[in-house]
Image (cartoon, rainbow, N blue to C red; front, side):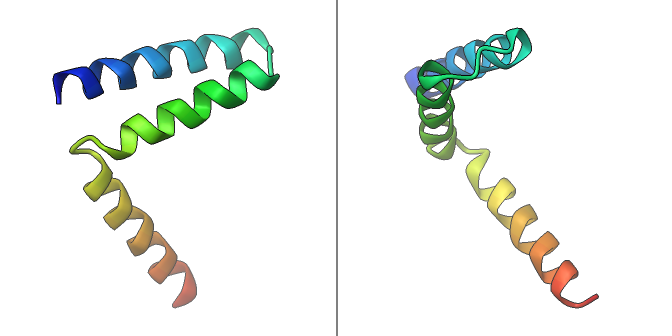
Length: 62
């Protein structure tokens, strides 16, 4: 778990700086994919999935 959280922080930080600098290339895509992969294996994945499901349900009921 500790390794996963640090990789999430690392990929998030790198992605933030790549997007901020405007460097949107293959490196950004790889960083974003790595960030998503490691973020999905943390404890934050369940609440984010629940929030996404709730928003989709709310939008479909409008």
